[in-house]
Image (cartoon, rainbow, N blue to C red):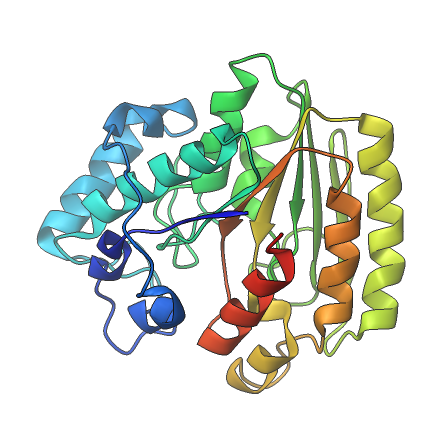
Length: 275
């Protein structure tokens, strides 16, 4: 599996925020991947007015909401992150885009939950425009509300999310149309999680996608559990990640990093999916 990384992702400066550049400390040794810088790709899923709002906020270093901070480099970094996701989706081999800021909470007209633009959704829309049939599986601890909002009711795309409930952002309680949600309890273990994965696998197999897009959130891993605060977190081990890996095997697939705030969670999680 190819790892797509560039030191530019460390330049989204967030200070003491939980989503900080230290998350990628184990990958600093990697050579920089060649990335395009194409702002137009943002328009695949985001409104032009929203893109300009984010640009201006970053220029002034204004937070986009109470927990989504920016710096002067944040817009540039976010554009590179979106292009890295497209690069991963277009790879002949399975590829993992080790990007920040993350994206799955960002919708067409909003940025929230540490996310400026929806990297995975941009990559998926790029592939939809090429005629691909795509399944998204999101295993971040938090529901991918932005991705669901962007693709709800759209043709040729399936969205499946396994996430904690109740938990931020409070969505993903029900399923409908092409979006299927598995809200799971606080401190969920491998057994409960894998039961939900077994159901998700059936949906993906029936959909028979050309490509599976993975919102890879490692905040559901047990090493993040103590960091997330009271009432937040799962206790998943590599056993659950190995089950996801088996689900993906029959399909071409790619990964985009979402959550995971203990660098060890990200390192160990990525290692599971290495070929």
